[in-house]
Length: 430
Length: 187
Image (cartoon, rainbow over all chains, first blue to last red; front, side, top):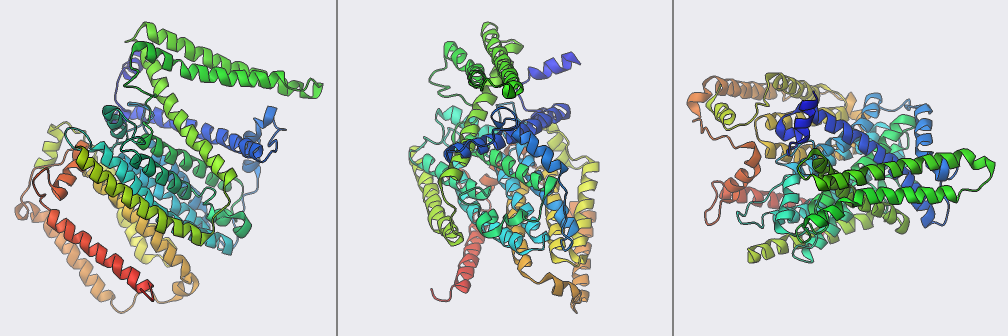
């Protein structure tokens, strides 16, 4: 058994490619747990960041600086009464949150956290991602219909119209990035997520900077469309609380409602990963070709450890600044333990980085490399996740006709123009 | 075992097409297709149709045609079915579910279904004699690229199906223009 595990850790292909169901299952479980933890963390960060944008404190009571608030919320949602309205369509009402959840999590099978850190590398990776994530709208539509109530139905109608419109611009932006993958000697592009990142590595440029400003424009179009696709502010017309109470999930409560939230956040992470993979170089660290000396490798491999060290430092400062009243004693101890935990992780990562440097073919080096890939990927995704919060705090909600006008009369022509120009520039350049 | 699958196995592809998966997916497709025409509620029927489309998409995946699978999911399950639901939700379900389901053309429908079944059976029985086995399975890893070569051709050479493909896209363009003209009162 240890031999088996060791032999796998040394392999350089995804479990899907190796045909290894056991490792595929382990990867799926890791990703599922990771995404769930990320959603919990995102929930806390969103509430805190939104509060600070509005000069409030946000959650402060449950745990130090409200750190345990998401867990308290989860417990509350699980204990809450789960009501199915008498006039609702029982079966469809029951199945709707699961559709959204399935669509949001199935997408993660092809997300490349590293050259071999993905469940599977499909030949149609990006097509699969777009297709399956577009199935998520079915959950929203069906939930609104099954509630048999006016506001949810209006929310569902808005949502389906919105998603179908923005999918067009999104698809065209993606196509222009895929066109860029074919700018090599053989002239064949790829749809595989890992292949797209490798194409960027081969061409020595992230696609956001390729054919400037065409790549940047495509990313901007995608970034706008992905907010509309995930029903986030300022495009959250489907759940506009000032008009529709809560839109499509008005009639949902308790655990079922939390499933909608979980799938919304999971879908946000998934679309951010598409943007990172297509335009921001996926798992690659900054300047992998320019600064490729072993010394640079070592410096960049210190980053994960240093990040955790920084987090630990913030937690320690928080502990030190805790009021010295005896009321805060338990919270103070809790935060100190949390800081110590973060510091321990940082120490572990730094030790791994140093160990990986001295023996470059060993397992430590492989481990170190993998940590680096996942770290840079997650960091880039985290930037997009923060942007989601920032947009929500900054912009007022659009009116529905404005939303449609932007989708069809602004985004679609621009994305078509970017696609055509990318093709022309590509032909001239090759 | 047919030569196509043999060639596929020889070229190093793992046999994903285990019979168990095939029967499970085929059964799912048939059962949900029957539900589409027997369920009284239009939204339930549309959901059953989505299940049918997805299980057929999985069958394409087992036939080493990932690109067709992707397109099936994007276009049918993700695009067209959302529009279907969009329209159905605006219809009064209460009234339509009380109406008589099968109208007078059902004998014609049955005849058409039987003819299609006969066609499938005959293709299954004497398909080998009727259609020449090309013996050219597209390798899974470059399936999409091969389809592109067939549709658009390689450098300096027109593809096998370029003309038909372009004509089909022109037809779609005509349909789009027609839809726009029908919705606009004044152009």
